[in-house]
Every structure is written in structure tokens, then in C-alpha cells.
Image (cartoon, rainbow, N blue to C red; front, side, top):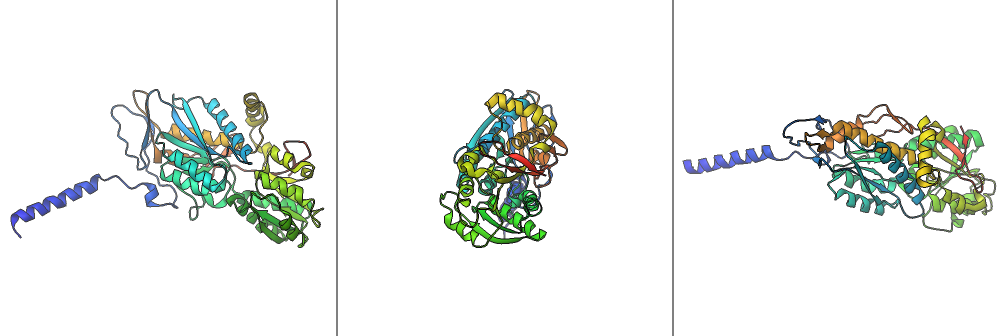
Length: 427
């Protein structure tokens, strides 16, 4: 091989090494989908002179007079809209209370996740396409999160849900994705108290469950069943229904043949109200105790079930365990702004979700001399997962490495005809 050829080969090798050294680092999404979030994001604070973003997920630049853009993905339509609208109201009050973050106004935009996989995917795709968005409050429902969160995570966003309760959403070896967290409890927290109430307070020994195939309902009834059996009870039937069906007679008749004394159906508003009404019209179920969960915490259940709502129990976060500021400050602001008291259960969790996002931005953002901000995306995630002892409306919040930030206390409520909210009766 002559010297000319050797020289050309040497130059090619050298060029390839230079290109490799200058290539951007792979994002954390490419490296892993299930490992705990890595450290190594940039550190916030004030800088002078030029600034170069080296964050592995990139940075959001906010001009001197520009707002910080936060989005939401919540259910704003369908029979479950009270859940998402109530959460959006809590979010808007948080934005009002915060006013600015590091001297910048807050821009809020949102999408309807429809409390479904299809809606969650569509909402996430729209939000992910906007590079100005720093973080997302949402989704409302775990089914929407299952498909929406991976897209939001891949876009480098911080995602904090006020109401996702699916157990596996924060399990690193299952369906957790980097950047995700929540201020809501896990179903593993809600199922056992519901079972304890059924077994110890009601005296139930034979229970049946119904779920609608959603991630939320399926996992919650499974957690209830596991805890109920551990206490000594028996699960005599487990049925699956379509959330859009209106006639549940065949399912309820089948359940009645197993002679349960307790029926647990942690589903959503429309089907939950109809099952409540039709169960009392089913031979063999007249005296059975009925119980739903937080997905049925809505005035629409009172209206949809009619007189049959009397005595219906639901498990849900305990509003009386919230901090003093909830009743003294937040609820009056809610009434003044919207002309009604809160009408679902996750409004305070949504308030806290935004405040955690704001705290993380304040910790991670780099402030430049001209008043602009640079928000490194991985550093923002790191700051969120590092939050400890945040005094929120819902309690003292400390985030785990996979984003479980809740300080949950579960209570049982009882519905009465023509009244909302339901009465807290246990513990």
C-alpha cells in the first residue's frame, strides 16, 4: 500500500473519531425505559456571559418577556368530565396563587384525554409536538396514561398526574417512564382500606367485584380482592363490563347466583350509577352492600342513580386529612372563582402537582443576565424526583425516584339521596 493511500486512510479514521466525539449523547429514553432517573442534569441558578446547554435531553429557552409554558391533559368531556374539570379548576387556582415563576408569567394550555387510551394518545401527541412546553399536569385516568405517558416521556417532558392510581405506573420494571410522577395515591393504597371496611365494619364475608377493563378499575378491584381474602373473606365472582353499556342485568343476575353480601365496583360515573340502580332491581342482590371508589365521586352519580344512591359507599382520599390551608383558603377561592364547591376528588392533588412542577423549575432553571431562562429538561426531572417535605394541600409530599409523591389517607364515604358531597363515615 503506497504512502498516498495510507495518508487518505489516516485522515478518514481521524475524521470519524472527531465526528464520534462531537455526536450528541443519547437521551435517557434511548438508554432505558425502566431504570430510575439518572443524575447528571445541569444545575440551575444565575449565570453571566454566554451559556451553552449540555443537558442530555436538551433545554427549553424562555425569552426575557416570555411566559413559562405548562400544559395539562385531563378529561374534559364524556360522562367522566367532572373528574377532569374539577382537576383543571384546582390547577388554575394554583397558577393564580403562584403568579410567576422566577419573574416569568405562566402560560397554561390543555388537551382532553377523554379518560381513554385513544384520548390519552391524541392529547400526548399534540403536547409533545410543542417544544415550548416545559411540563404537563395529567393525565386524569390511568388508561390514558398507559399510552400517553410514553410519548410525553420521549419528548423529554416532566409529567405529574393528579389522579392516576394504576399500581404499575410507578413500578420501574413495569410501566414507569422517565419524567413521570403523581400526587395521587396508588391503588395498592386504596384497595386494602376498602377491604378492611367491607370485612370489619360491614361484616361482609363473600364479595363480588366488577371492573370495566380499564387499568384503574382492574388493578383496584384486584387490590381489594387480595386484601379481602387475606382478612378471611371470599371473592365469589369477578365480572368485566363495557363502560358504555347500559344494561347490566345479565352480569348482576350471574353475580346473584353466587350469593355475595358485598359488591365492589370501582369504575366510573356512567356505568357506576347504572349498576347502582340496577343492582337493587336484581333478585338476590336486594340486601347486598354496594361500594364504588374515587372514580364515582361526582354529583353525576347522585343524579344518575336516583333514589338507589342511598347507602352507596365509595372509597376515596380523605379530605379531612388535608392541611389546614385546604378548608381555610383553597375551598373559599374555589367557590369564589367557579361559583360552586369542588365537585370531584382530585382538585387539591392537581393544585399540588403544579406546585411541585414550579418548585422543580425554580431549582433547575438557569437565569441569564437579560432576564431569560434556560430550563434543562433532565435537570428539571432530577429536581422533581429530589423534592422532599413539600407542604402541599394534600399533605407533606416527598417524591420517590419513580415519582410517587402522595401523602395518602383513604376514607369511606356514604351517598344520600339528593345530597353532594357524600358523607364521610369511616374511619
